[in-house]
Length: 162
View 1: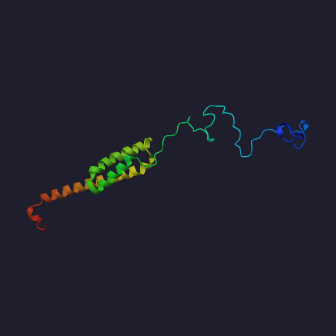
View 2: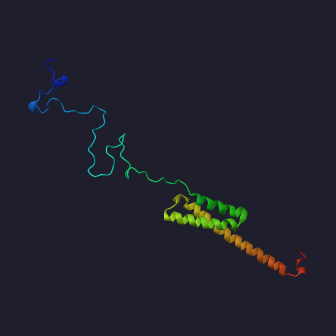
View 3: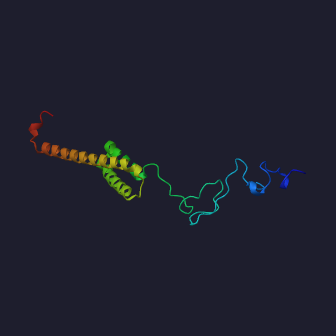
């Protein structure tokens, strides 16, 4: 094999080695489309080395996944709103008083960060609906009591129109 260099490669076109700057054999380079060579591990700790397959860096926090995020309102906020709405339709302050306590409890949990903030509007709505229902029910009950007390105090002859 005349005219070939080491390993069956033809010599570079600029002449053979020495002062020409090319040198033989040519420096090793990865083929086109190949991934770049791996970099050395980081100087400070804080991750798995070598990186996991697929080239993705390790997750932050030593490999622990963050806690799941609640997307919607909590069950307490939903319960408070259902009780507040039911109190208007069926049972007055019997359902609205528990709705007030449940809604206040949920709002406190949201402020402390113990519950999802997605339920804040629902808990506030439940609280105010239940408060308004309680006030209206109490005023209505007082009105009925006054009405029947006035009617009972009237003389029997004054009810001729009824």
